[in-house]
Image (cartoon, rainbow, N blue to C red; front, side, top):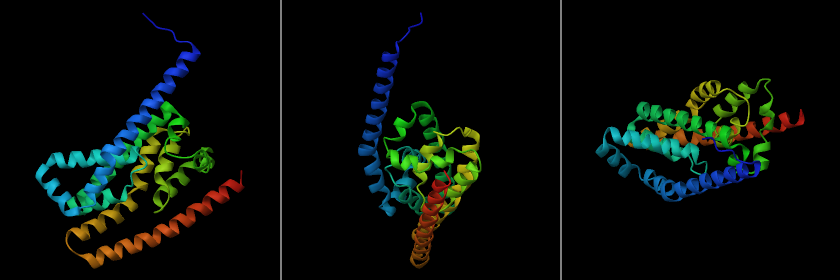
Length: 231
């Protein structure tokens, strides 16, 4: 038996679903996201926790990274630094990259399903519109890759915005898989240096990363302004 809904009923269902997702996201951030960041910010305890849980420690950390991508309020850098500290450079980098890819795919599918209203849960309409030049197919994939690769750019905003374009999921996976590597590496290298008590090298890495991030943010704003003027 097929149930038919009126247009008004469909809107009510859509709004109810949207509010339910919003409530779940807020609850996850409050009860999981905040304690998670506090936990990772204590590297030695985090490493002990990972060692005591074996493979499950890796699985749970992967879930943390996915959650961080979906809940845009949660910063990713502490997790990446914690991964380098607890797992070492190579394993930490691979876990972070895999989590970011899976989280990015989940965000993409949620935005495609729920639309711009879902994006506005995390970002203002003004910020969303600042990337509207990416809806133009001409060199769009290049700009998405370039913005993701530059340290300091709003990658969470871009991850949500991409779902509003007509880019194919496969292309999005390919772009984010490669473009996110540099920013992950800088964090996990620093975290690994802290883990082996090489504090001078860790400080050097973080200072260089901060400098590059500042330059990256400047480049990003220049790109946005130039692209807006061409409209």
